[in-house]
Image (spheres, rainbow, N blue to C red):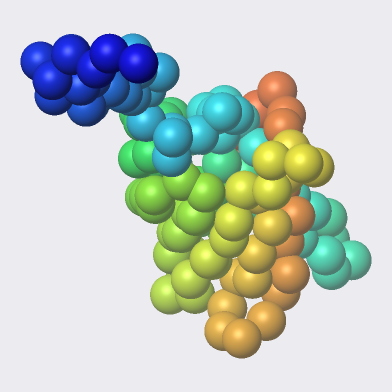
Length: 138
């Protein structure tokens, strides 16, 4: 059997170049396959119908947006900064922090508002995301 030394030496280089091209063209293996961009709503419990809403954008892994909450038809807070690195998001409203994680299999954002679990919230996709229709507190 005949082996060409030049061909054997060039094969590792070809393999290295081919794998580099494949990794660049396929994108990052950690890029999210599902985006959290859009509007989200979570019931907040209580007898007065409190709810929380998020309006999110996503660029790569970076998540940003705003959060609001309303109860009994009145705003509790609005335009609070939401930020995070996919799949995690956080915001603080009334001095209490929400920390949650996007669950791609359920298409929901679940987490705790307050530590360790003052209020468990589960956000689902929705039409509104900025507490439209809620009145300012009197």
